[in-house]
Length: 99
Image (tube, rainbow, N blue to C red; front, side, top):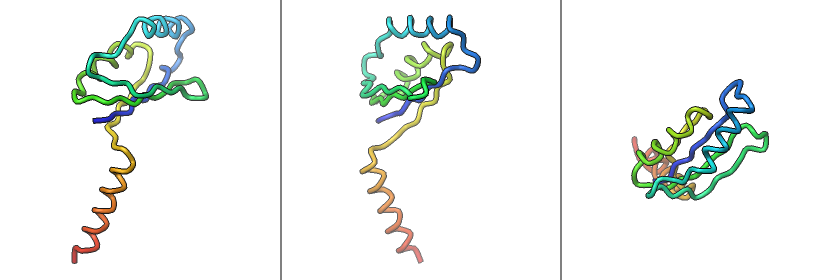
């Protein structure tokens, strides 16, 4: 399963807290079994996103727990757009046949 993790700096984050977060990040590595496919940062420098693939969502919870002191985070289960388009097409077909 794929997940998108979004994070934003906590409100009123200090320079010291940001520096500490970077220090912790430099020592961190993903849990074995959590494949971080992509990390991207927001252009406004207020956070970023990661795309992660894993069969065990608890691994994401483990990795995110490390950073909760520094960021507000959200995790979204996602599908590839080809899959959502296929599912959407099937739903339309079903609705059109439901009389």
